[in-house]
Each structure stands twice: as C-alpha cells, then as structure tokens.
Length: 275
Length: 283
Image 1 (tube, each protein chain N blue to C red):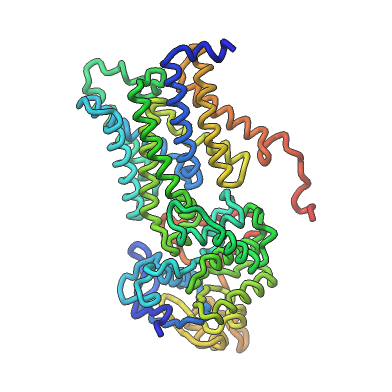
Image 2 (cartoon, rainbow over the protein chains, first blue to last red; image 1 turned 30 degrees about the vertical axis):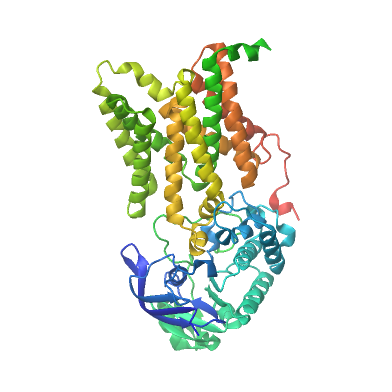
C-alpha cells in the first residue's frame, strides 16, 4: 500500500531560515494524527510542507507517492483561523462551495452535484441553518465548523488542519473530532496540529511531537511521557512535584513568512485569541 | 427633458458616455477584486507607471495603448517579482517603482519641445476628445478583461479569500496573482484617456468601497459596484456639460459623493441606522 505521507530526511523553512530539519515521517491511510509541539517548533510548517505550500530544501517528500502538491485535488488544507479575513464578503455556504472550485475548473459554474455536496457537508457539521450567514457574523466554533465543511465538500483523501479546534467550545470540539474520526475510519488520512495535549491524547490515535525536527512519534500515551515532553517543549515545561506543567506562550503559531497576513480582531468570539 | 437630451445631439458627448460606461464597468469589476485583495494602491502605482509608456509612444509615433500597456504590465510584473523575493514588502516595492517610473515619464516628457501643452490631458484625461477608433479599442480591450474575469472568477475569489487553502487544493495561486496584476494594468490602460493618470485609482476603488458599505455578499458587491461604475460617470458628464467644468473630475466627484452617501446612510455604518443595544446586553 502506498503511504499517504512519506518524508525522508526533509529540511524546510522560510527565506533562508530553516524551521524543520532531518524530518522522517510515514503516515498510512486511516491515520488520525495530532501534531504537537511548542510555538515556533514547526507544526504549521510541517502541514504546509505536506500540503505542497512549501518546497522541501533537501531530502525526499512524497504525498500519495508523488511530490507534495502534485495530488492537490486529494488534499484539503484548513488554515489557522487567524490567517482568514473574517470580514470578507462571503457567507458560510460560499466558503464551503470553494471546496468544490478546484474540481470544477475555470468557467464552469457549480451544478446540482456541487450544491448537494455543500448541503451535505454543512449538515455534517450541523451548520445548515447558517448557510446564508456572513462568516464574520459566526462564532469562533461555527467558523471552524464551516472550514471543516469546506474540507469535507472537496472529498479529499488527506485532511491537513492547522489548529482546527483551538479556542472552540467543548461541544464543537467533540463534534468536529467525531467527524474527523469517522473520516479516518473510512480510510482517509487526517493530520491536525494542536497545542492542546489533553485533546491530542483524547481524540487522536497517533501523535507526532515536533520541535525543529520530529522529536517523537507514537500513540496517544506519548504525551504522558515526561522525557518526550521535556525534549519537545524544553523550557516551556514547569515541574511541580513529579508532574509536568506546560507553560504555553501567547501566540501559538509559527512565525509566518513575509507577506502572509494574519487577521486579529477583537471579537471575543474569535478562536485562537488567548490572553 | 432638454436637460438630458440636448447634449446627446453632440457625437463627442455620446462617445464620452459610451466610453465612460465601459471604463466604469471594467474598473468596478477589477476594483472589487483589488479592494478585497488589499491592492488599492496598486491602481495608483500602475497608472503613474504607465506614464513613460504613453510619452514614449507619443515620441515614437506608436499607438498610445501599446506604450501604456508595456509600461504598466512590465511594472506590475516587476512589483510582483520583487515582492515574491521576500525582504522588500509589497507596499515598499510599489512606492519605489511607481515614483521611479513616473519620474522617467516626466524626464521623457521634458525632452519634447514646448512640452507643457498635452501634459494636462495625460494627467487628467480627455474623455470629451475620445475618437471613434479610441472607443472601439477601449471597448475591445474592456471585453477582453471582463472575459478573463468571467473565466477565472471562482479561482480569483478563492485565492483572494484563502490563498493557502486554494494553493493546497491545486489552484495556481502565484499564476493567478500575475494574471490579476496584468488585468489591473490593462484596466488602467483602458481608463487613462477617460480620467487620466491621477484619478484612475478612484474609478477602481471607489465603486467597490461604496458597495462594501451596502452589502456583504460577493455577488451583490460586484453588481452594486458595476452599477455605480456605469451610472456615476454619466451623471458626472452631464454636470460637467452644463457647468462647463472638468469632466474627469466630475466623474470622480459623483462616485465620491455616492461613497459618502452610502457611508452616511448605509445599513452598518450609517448615522441613520437604528441604535442597537450594546452587544453585552443582547441575549
């Protein structure tokens, strides 16, 4: 069987600044994998590499047996909430329909099958009632639901989700993870970054710990391994007695490359905003 | 009714009406994407950058459109290329190239003996002087621009809204960006004769900005902007005819008035909107 993702001694970064080096990773279809690690450790960079948005500097990278980006129609990438302009003049249904655009190609307008796929995807994330709502008028959790619906509507083989459940309420987190769990069980590959170790242990079947390289890879019990935590988070760990406490810093994503805009608004409902 | 019909007896006025409607429509459509992409100043930059091309064409006896297109498209590609290298931010690259190209145009212009004469026309447009041939040329170019948008409207929208998601799903985001820069350049070339170098940016940005105040759906946004782009220049031309004042200035002033009207009366920003209770009190 062809691996969904195969990285062999890959290095990647922005401009002349390396972010990840000596990355080795193999993920098979059906994987439900959390990428954890400190801020700036390379979680987002790893996802962008697999998505074909960043070219590997060295080493060998394969997605479904081809170079990353070559099988783009089979890949759905959900960016961090902060990289989205929520004042953009589109409603929830418009955003989900964008998931159909690549397969439609130029000129062609969405047809009955596309509208049906959008309706089904919205229903799957329980957002049918909000299809005509402008995205800025949605709560943080609803926004994440809409972006997962866009990924579902594109009928991918590989899901790449950058902090899909950051800052959302518990109910949304349970719902979205249930959808992703079902997709993985049906043979799709799901990779999501998260800074929430408890959530990673509870909801994912495997974990990849990243800090400038892949520090450790294993099942959910990995996050209980003090040695792994120490190597992953280093100075961000505080030991209280025999328990490790993770001290997270304010801004949870990797340093974005020049030209990538991050939208921070002061709406209390925006996900990803933490004091 | 003579107020409306009298100017229609003049062919130059009819041509001006037709030309301004084409220019207004094309500018509004391209301007909508520009505003959403945060490229408002690209319009100003490229119109100024077209100046040396216009002057060079004049000196060489080449067609005006050719010179302007080469200069504007060349500059837009150069801005895109410099920005892609990193290091220099987009707005910085725009600032450097736009001033540099305009200075080169002024230099070329100053080599023409008694050069002051036509300068006003280049800077502020001469829509009442548009010939039948000019009208045909700008209409054909306008149709080309609108046809390209009709082909790629979905892809341009997706890559504007979420370049990472669009790129990962296989849309050629970088190529689309260059296509769009080329479309801006062509739109400016079409608009130069009508409104001149300095005021083109208003034709591009103001209708879309006005539409943003009245709707938050992309399809309606582009329709409202297009309606403003077509109607406002006609009103401006009539006022300019009856008051014997600068036509390009009035076209822009009518669009600006529409923007201010929408700002004051619009559903979200308007002074007349119903006061809502503060958010924390609503259930």
